[in-house]
Image 1 (cartoon, rainbow over the protein chains, first blue to last red):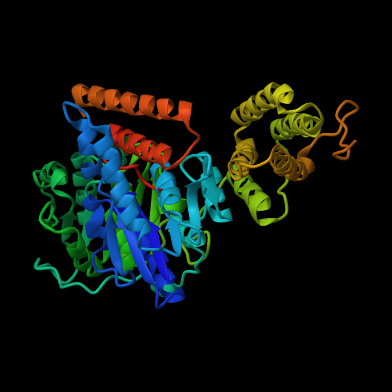
Image 2 (image 1 turned 90 degrees about the vertical axis):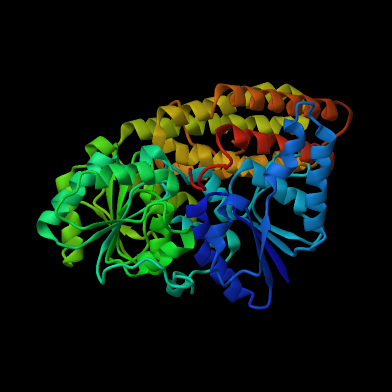
Length: 482
Length: 57
């Protein structure tokens, strides 16, 4: 058996794919499991014993002819064709897309041969977006910042691949020890992040280290990429009582496993080292800034915590210093999200509104009981959405008699109204996004089949709205066919 | 990313999109259409930086 897994995102996401790839190997011990990554992120596969081979997406080589002074489109198409042909010739039995991007969806469809099974984002035969699998449809509709998903990305990837994770899928690779000489105990700080807006400025880090040093005397090891040197230099130029060992820009990425494994604690923002620490099972204090959804990408090692802050300015240095000391001394810091084994994997104090959204998500996707709320706005929104949905169902019944052309403007308008209602009542987006994902999954084919599939989808929506529809003299729930 | 590079990418993208539209005027969606779509998406990714961004964002 031959399996190709596409992981075209960045370093952190590649590391978060490791547990899934290990579970895939366990499920198919004899299979050839190849992983497609971008060449510049290839290092993040180093030491991963579960895979057979790596495939590089040669973006630069393929695109270079169109970037010439006289663009040569034919040559670019030829190069892309040769790349795809070579991959198709491998005869993959399964292609698993863990990338969730438009590019990856086209690539997957291009690689899909007759007997090849596909999981994740792909394309229909007419080029429209398609989603293969329930978990991928859930991902499309409900995952990302500002959405109510609480499943961790590692679990979602496993769901897409159709594998079940075990605790020991999180373990570090066997790599040579780091050449860096480090003290027996230390705390690691990753000074950067995947994006500048998700990291703290040098002054803030200096203050945190200073406050930490007042109660604990552990050395601090700074890590980061070469382009993060400026942050580390800013930190070491304000020395405090703690010994600071600056390794920023001095370590290869895989070498960090050795540095992290021996650390007592990793402190940092949303970044690849945080995901590497989940593999080394190093306790983490994740400073989660802005729109990052920690439920999806937070640390997964025991005694890990997430501190939420909308902006770097709102991170209180003294508080962070105290929390670091508490974690190291085995105390339970208050007011933070705490990692716990399970799925979802954090314990938090939450508002009723947050809980409601998550419970509604679970009702829609996992058939759990629909949660109750006293929010009239939500009831009114559901009632309006239900009315529009009834209209769509009626129109779909007419399509068979009068043809799609006459009904299309009404259906398009209804679609717009559905999404406007979702914008007005954010909780309703759980429904409207579900609808959007289901619509993408309707296959091209005879009009009759498309109408039937769409009709069934709207009927399901009606069922899911039922608990919240206000019955009045003007709005009566009736059977679908009246 | 400099404005020049951004503009250059935008022009390349327009060239590819035109080629796709022209192709679709005479043929239904096929492997050639898909190759053009892949090139379009590859260029779009260059516009921010050489990556699609993080998986869940």
